[in-house]
Image (tube, rainbow, N blue to C red; front, side, top):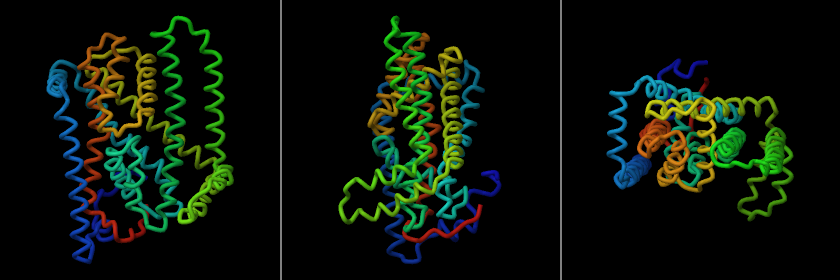
Length: 350
């Protein structure tokens, strides 16, 4: 099934899921909330960008590369954006659709709205709240669990690739004596095996989770957690495949942008550096907007080994941030004007 078989907004969608509230008060409140979120996003973007001392230099570097470099590098990175978000959508959709009938188009909008909310929260935890806006109220906790499972699979891919990248990079550029890598490598490998075991056996986590003492008003979560017992290994493997696809696409976009800005690591070292950067970035408990400087500084350190200057390294990182986060976040923010949060979403067929 093609994602773009039908227009993103159809008459049926607008009348079912993306309709205004029948009650004027709810409609005004909905517009006020949506407008407030949009203004907040724009305000944070302006505050973040206006304080960047290198912002003008980054823009000039981009314009200069458009004239001097092969612009096809940038075009190829941009054309991979739909595949990036299609992979993320399919990863989440194939879990949530088991109990929430939802078209791929609506799932894509839910993902984009989640991106919008995630920009303001540490480690992008806000995406949970954004995605469940297009899920019926009785299924929203299940949708949160589905998102956790999808993120678990993505984390496994990130850790696996990141640890390989970090090991390769440290051995090649930073550490002369790598004899102490053996024991640490075995411990890390064992930890990954344990994480993969629990991922493909999610059902055994349910009795473990039930040992956690919760307040009485939150004990209803035990019933929702039971959904973990319904995941089979084939479904979990499919989720992991989409997580790998998204990771490869994202890393390839970064590699193409490095070439566009004149940073030319060899294939293996380039992807190893990217994997190491992604691994460290994920460990930073910062919102994507506020953490841009920290992430950029890490990229400057890594790509300096290939003779890259600060501006080129920051420009590649900043461009990846714009096309993969800011543009989808803006689409998700404007979509909020069409999403009726108070109204139960109508069922849709794929």
